[in-house]
Each structure stands twice: as C-alpha cells, then as structure tokens.
Length: 629
Image (cartoon, rainbow, N blue to C red):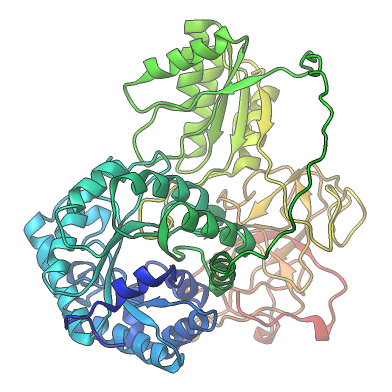
C-alpha cells in the first residue's frame, strides 16, 4: 500500500467493499512485556523496534486488515514530559517504518494507520491553549504523513474541541482521516458531549469515517454506535476495550472479557452499522483472531434451510400469578452533584410500585457524583425507605472510610455492601496511582471491628455499631484445582502452615514476604499487612496473636557495593523489617548470622531490625529459590 498523498483513497475503497478489522491494543502488550505504562511507550520504536514488530506480526497473523502504528501519545508536548520532545519526528517515522515492514511481509493488502492521540494529557490540558495543542498535533501528523501512512487514526479523544482541532489539521494533509471520540459509561464524552453532538461537530469536516474507541467495553460501545448511526452517513468505527479494567494487585489492572464474548459483540457492532471493528486496551491477538473469524462468518451467506411445515400449537391458559418469595430492591444510581432531586423522584416512582428497599451502588462515571452513603441517608430521611449503600475503597484512606461509616451509622444507615472498586477510566490507560489502604476484604474487617466496638487501630470505641455487612461476588472461572476456604495449602485445615494458631480471615501483604516455589494461602486476623499496613497484593503468611512465631534476625553486615538481589538459603518469610531488595537470615534464631555467605546484605545503611518471621520447613538445596523478587 502506498501513502494517502495521492488522489486514491484506499481506506475509503476498502470500507465501501466490506467490513474492515483493525488490530488490538499495543500498549497492553508492551506493558505485558515488562514496560511500565508511565514511560513513553512510543520511544520503543527506537530503543526496541523488534518488540514492536513482533506485536504487529502477531496481529497480522490473525488476518486483520489494518495495523496501527505505535505512536499513541507521540506528540511533542507529551514526549517532552519524558525529555523526548526533540525526537518527535524520529519516533513517529520509526513507528510507520516498523508497521509498514510488517504489513508488506504479510503477503496481502494491509493498511497502515497512523495512531494520533490528543496532543496533551488531562493534566496538561488545564494549562495548554488551543493554538499550542494544534501546533503539537500538526508536528506529529506531518511526521506520520511524510513516512507514508494510509490513514490517520485519531483515537481516544475525550474532549470534542480537541477532536475537531486534530481533525482539521489532519484533513489539510489530504490523507484519509478516521476521527474517534471516547465515551464514558453515561454515554457522553469526558467533556460531556453526546454522540449526536460529536456527529454534528464533525459534519463540516471532510473526514472519511468517524467512530468511538477505548474507555468502554463491547456492551457499552454497542450502545454508543447505536446512538451514532442515526446522525451520520459516514462509515462508523468501533474499537472497544476488553471490558472495564479491574484492579487486581498494586498498580496492576486486568481486563476480563474473553475472546468469544468479544467476538460476539463484534458481530453485534457490525449489525448496528459499524464498518470497522477492532480492539483497544486489554485486547490481544487472541481477541482479534476471534473477531476476524466472526466477521468472516457473518459475511458468508447462511446455509439454505428446508421449508418449515406448519405445526398446530395448542393454546394454553395464562399461568396464575405467583406471589413473590423475595424482597425486591430497586437500584438508584447516585446522581451528579446538585441533582439529588432526580434520585428522589426515581425512588418515589419505584416506591409506588411496592418496592420498600433501595440499593445505591457506587458511581462508575468520571464526573462528580454524590456519595452513595450520602444518597442513602437522604432517601431514608426523605421517604422513610430502607436504603443499602455501596462503599468502595479506591482512593480512600482507612481513616476516611471509618469516619464516613461512623457518620452513616449515626444517621441511620445499617446495610453496607463492600467493594474494592476501580477508578473510572479517564482516557489512555487505567490509573496506576491513588490511595488503596484496604481492599473489600479489609473493609469487611473494618466494619466487623466497628460492630465489635473497636476502630481500625484496635482502640475501644464508646459503643458498638450494628452494621449488616454485604459483599458483591463475581463468580470465578472454573479451574482444575480449588482450595477450600480456611485450609492452608501446606498444613492442616483451618490452621496456619507455620503455627498451631487458628485461621480467622484472609490477609494479603506487600513487601514483607518472599516468593516461594510453593505459595501458601493462610489465614490471619489482619485485613492489611500487620507490619507495613500497606494495601494487599498477594496472599501470604502474616503474624497473628494466635500464631507461634519464631524470632529471626536480619543480617546487617557491612555493605560493599550495590545491594545484591539474592535470597538467603533456605528461604524464609519475613515480617517486614526492610523493603526490597533484601534477604533474611534463616539459620540464626537469636542473633545475626556471622558468616556473610549465610545471607545477603540488605540495603546500604539499614539498621539491624528484629523481624518476627515464620520459617518454612521441608526445603532442601534443590528447592532453594534464587530468583530475584
């Protein structure tokens, strides 16, 4: 394929001939290869072009029709944050060169799309004007066009003014333009624009196609496509995420939509009017392989069916109504700030239908919303109905959670549903920062402690609360191996693997336990790490009052050179006397190890600390774990 500088428009011709399938996520696979999302991923076009090429090849092997360059976020303003502003042209040209080589090696006609993101991040938008944004977009687009892209793909634009600015610059080049906005769960862009308003704003520009990508999963994006179709005659593109991101551990997020589910919705998107389908965050070559097969099946004519014969169907009397056996809850979404009257009106309407209990879940949109707890209090006071409040732990300290819960209890809220939650996606990738003192399990333990009359630090309260604690459970996919709750993987049922103490509650610790070749799921009474009080990331042993603990001493010999990322032998679990990278003595019970060969020195300058650890038995020389943390 040649670039789009001439009169031919191969992108428009391919769209007119049938449905195109674009590739999937680039950043997700680069991240999976060990690159943090905080770095400038387009720079890998220069530093690791082989990795980028392998990702292109993996998508092309599935049969996609369009590959997009690894240039998302490669504008001067974004690259300047990483000190790469002067390399804008080189990075974009290298991205096109890598994608073009992969497309030519596919042995079939493949289009190369130049990926263009908003010129600024959400944080930069507040201090960068329209003229500077347009100049930054022009610098990237000129580099992509000079390198010979077939189509300019504007993607993940959450603000309509930025999309119109970028589309205007792109259309001036004469290259086909695909303009895509991103929508939140409420069906509006991050700036609050509807699909109708997006179509109206782009109607005056000579874009080849428009559409939507990112932020939403297949189901949410289907609703947006159905809203776009009545207001435009242009081809529509739809590139959803692989579901909504869910926080799994630490700063990591996962996408749970499998390939078959994604492919079924690709067919529905085509049926709703999409002429181009692909994938965004969280999608992999496996997802796109299923999409290619699903689109091919939909394009082929259905097999002929024999003529149906008329069969008499007896008419049955209508069934008698059966009295409900369960109490019915009506969900009332928390309204946006300043619109609590809407929630009251909806509650009055469902109350008239006989519903006497309301469920106020946490909001999932990026705009300011009222707290579910506050809405539940308001509904109870105004209507006299029973309200169940959903509480999430993301971006909240445990002290703030505790204060809100005590206030809600004082105002009459008794039923609380605990969730870990995930912050709403605001564009490129899931948020990797924020406050995560506890997860949903820790929130349950906090509520149980309040009911028992003590706060999060174990101090006695003046009285006890009377919360009824609930959780939301997402059924896990069946696996071949399951463990019964309360059973340690390497010990007797209901007891810790290192002590005779009884199991009481799950714990997950960060930074105070090493990784073992035989990971163990033990129970303890702390919702957070008993030593570091940090949020949970992986199940591990944790000291409990009921446990029989052995005292171990950290080796604190003189540090010579940089600390070694090695482990002591045999491996042992430490209660958190120092952060990574360290290794702990596992031979001495009363004092520091004397031969330096017994353990590895910790970080330079650290003080000798006495750690309460639990020793692992049954490890021999062959089982020693010498891998770095």
